[in-house]
Length: 79
Image (tube, rainbow, N blue to C red; front, side):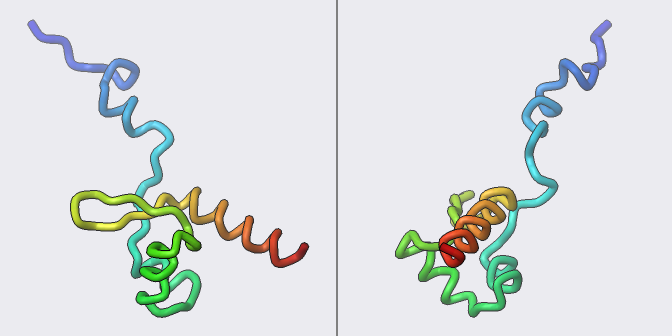
């Protein structure tokens, strides 16, 4: 008889731990910062915007990384 995995031994639970409920899209970033989506793509090309990563052909952003980037920008602007 096969045992049903418990939340402590289920590999999906381990993978899911610490991950956001949803990664952000370039549209989300454009809306959050009230900029055109093309600006988001330029930030990525110039490596000046929040760090993103590819999932297949799609770009996604970790909300924590975006928050850290925004805090860094605010601190740099205040200095």
